[in-house]
Image (cartoon, rainbow, N blue to C red; front, top):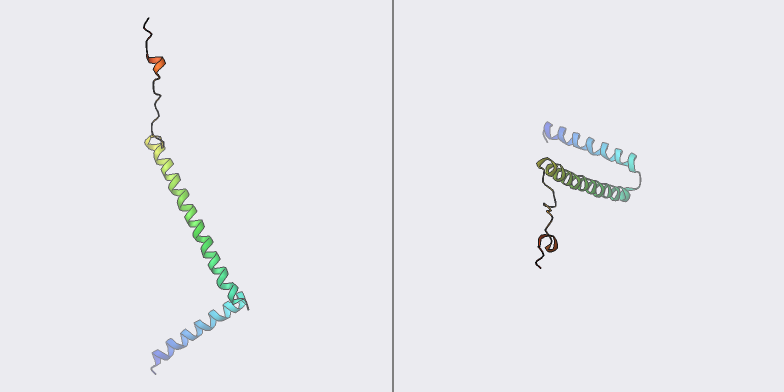
Length: 90
């Protein structure tokens, strides 16, 4: 085994040991709970990111339509009714 292989193996084993000690300190014997908590955190973060993106799209649409001056629902013009436009013939 070369010295470089030994050094990299030693560094890797030290990092693994530190990670295990950190996990043991943070989570103790609740290893199964740790994975569930991490998954729930990721799901919650995904929902929050999706909500922020949706709100950003709606806000951008509203602001861009306000700047352009167009109504997002189209132009609504009053249609003339038959009673107001017709003339009486007697």
